[in-house]
Structure formats: C-alpha cells, structure tokens
Image (cartoon, rainbow, N blue to C red):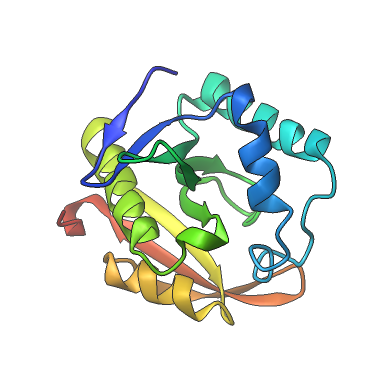
Length: 176
C-alpha cells in the first residue's frame, strides 16, 4: 500500500515492520489498554504479530490502520485509520475508524486530527458510503472525539462483557 496523508501536524503512512518497537511501546502501556480489555502486550513478538495482521489487511482489503508521525519531530505518535472489520460486530462486515496513541501524546488533539483525515480519505478517495466506530461506554474521551467529528450514536452492544457505544457516519453527512 502506497499512501501518505498529510494533516497540519501529522503524516499518516502505512505501518511497516520497522514500527515494531514503537508498537511495543504503545501497546505495552497498561494505561493505553485501560479501555481495550486491559490486555497490554508483554513481548515485541506480539507487536510484530499485530503489525503482520495490519499488513495482511492492506493486501486483502487495500485499507488498514496507518502510522501517525509527528511532522516536526518524526516521532511515532500512534496509529489511526480505517479497517475492514468483521470481528467486533460478528453479525456484519463494516469499515471501522480507530485510533490509538502513546500516552505522551494524549490531550493534544492528534486523535481528532488523524481521525478527520482518515474519514476524508475513506469518503473521498475510497468512496465509502458509511464508516462506523465503537467505543467502550466508560471511555469518555473516545466517545467525545467520535461525536465531535460527526459520528452519530446508533445504539449499544456488548463486547468482551463490556458495554460499547456504536456510531455511524454517512458520506453525505461528513463535513471536513
């Protein structure tokens, strides 16, 4: 996958195998995983496995999560982007917006900035009709971000014995 999305402060680019140390740093932090099932990775091999699954998404669906790189420093902030999803909501397939940031980058608007760019790519370049997102009900910040960027609450569901909020955003409702 050859893609580079640029925002005011970030580059979004395909994840590669050299991102393994950054993925491990991100996903081994228990605070990052507080609203992700409290199951942080414990080895870099787990991070490499996750990267392989993203690379497979690129091959299978032409879409997948993208690395967020801070323009001014070149730092790996986290990831954002779209994913063809069939695991969280097993009753149907959909395109999911997601993001995950290293703790040091929380609260600076990077998730919002990258999410808007990802939606823009999904609707304008991929011509998707709708994009979905989910957030644990207890994850206040993620729920605020999703509503702020235009997602409409569309019910709840249970995942890993946790209540989750379900969101949808239709192409004709997206305003960058």
